[in-house]
Length: 137
Image 1 (cartoon, rainbow, N blue to C red):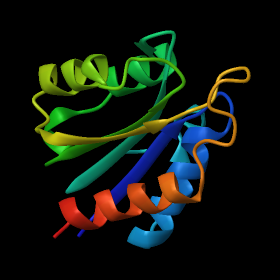
Image 2 (cartoon, rainbow, N blue to C red):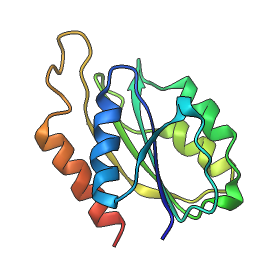
Image 3 (cartoon, one colour):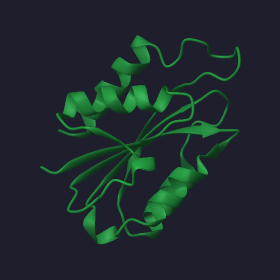
């Protein structure tokens, strides 16, 4: 099975989640700023933060460059210091490209300023790993 874990992280939260799930899946987490090549992927795990209620523009722009015929299934994992927890913008871009996106999403508390300090914590990381285990069966 060809699996890819990509992430965009401003404060390191998404990187921490991406690295943990990549370790679980036996692959390397790839920062989109390194412009990873995404080809012939059965499962694409997209890890990013929600900033001010919006998906990261850098992640949205990267996703728009993907070839929808090269990816069979996408999964979304996000963290947010605010109230927005669903990755609607990420889902919309992937869907427009013809990439099926799992209905289930993983979301966890992120940290912004003093709110949510310490997140994602060990429990959040373990929950992300459990999410990946459940969707990859």
